[in-house]
Length: 438
Image (cartoon, rainbow, N blue to C red; front, top):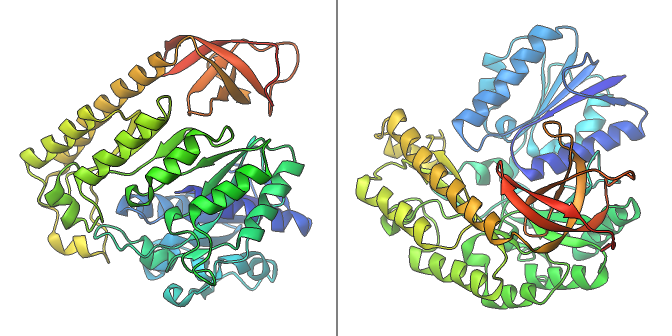
């Protein structure tokens, strides 16, 4: 039987899709690229915004139209929070598997009874992280390791705590096991991911190890693997963590620290647990101790009540701070969240314009950071051929995409030193050195 996957949303979803796909492969199923005919389609949905839910259902309808005889199994956050809407808007037989049952998806689908069934329970009752793991990376030189799931923060605009449940952590020995497996398959970089990764360990027995302690153990146990965090809340970035990171060669100098707004009034309305003074201090600490670190930011434009002055405060803060890039997106009201009761008073056009201003600012910041790295020799993990240029593409520890002229031998999966020679076209070009780094 041939199976095709379509995954939307975050890195946790990507990890879970990989784990599910490998379970199917272990049973003798063949995974085929999405777009090809298959006997079974698995859609792993996202619900972080209303737009994400719409896109998830759009994919389901496309599958139904194009391959009407195929079985369709849908899982993920949109199933957990909107299963009834899916049943109403997607025609034909469909099997819905909620996040609380996602680890059983292969078992349910393989039974062939999962044709017009709904397996969705109360995710808030989940007290342990689902037992999912990958046995090898699928087509990647960087491996994802999910160390945590769920969130206890309940930001006013966010549906994810209702879709993922409370924070749950993977035991340290299981994290080590997952990294060890990736190493055996030749992976050189592990990206640690979760929904609220800074809460790691808080639910484990004895108020388990902190994220920092886990990072220390991993970097010491696997000196040949470089570790990268997917995203971390500003409240979880400590001076101790940054000081340790600055002196640890195999911890990637790359921090993605969501901001959301540069207005204290809006941050309070969002139920974010910090103010701009705290955020400013965190970013400056990173830049002070790690001058060449990449610092990414998330910003939401047009949250209910954000006036011109408060939006300008966001622009001014981003201008002031030494950040590298900005992910900006317009606010989208999400049914089921506290913010949805505030209405959506700012026009779609105005939200889009504000997001555009932030993106332009972010692009300028990124180019400035890339330019600051020109002339440096950095260890690049090579991933794949760039279709546009025919050159080989890799990534530096501080998250700069680098293109080099391909040599006669294969670069994929190797870490080699590259001197950054030119910055253009939203990336860097370099000269490959001969001495191997890792």
